[in-house]
Length: 196
Image 1: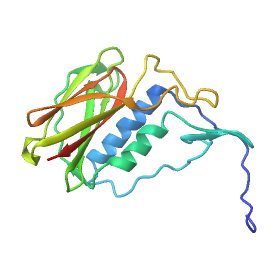
Image 2: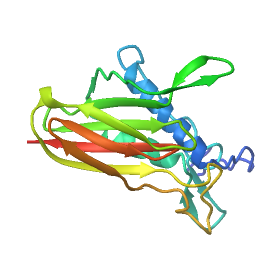
Image 3: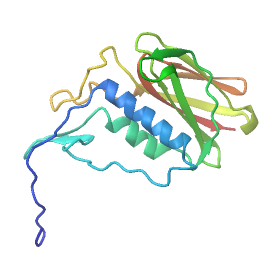
Image 4: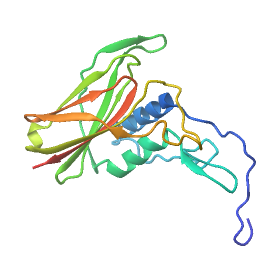
């Protein structure tokens, strides 16, 4: 480009992402965090329109795609230390990879008083319970959950319905030194835990 002008690309590859896509993105972020000891850098290449989490119309509206939410919330709330997270979950059988866990999760800590847990329920028909033992980190002062889920795995956000798939308050509570969260069917959930 010359001067202050940015080139305008043709409207190609403007994929529209579903709730299921958002859960997959959330699961990918969990995997990246779980392997932070080996992953040196990761990025989201396209940000607007072309396979991006934000869509726009010429001269008009902009809205967040479903995949925007797990990316933005993970970027904002993941702590600087990834805690070793052991997941004991029911499994399901896949044609290509054999047995796979229904629940994927990771916990991060900000080296202060907050732990953030990210979890995915891959079960498309049943909720799963997530229980995370945090007793070794101290007493739990508060628990807050945010969930991305819905009845239709193919639900999308559009300019006319930008919040069809959007984060909503989730269900989680302290149980002694543990946090217990309900993971709805086909969902991505973030649980923020403040330690006393």
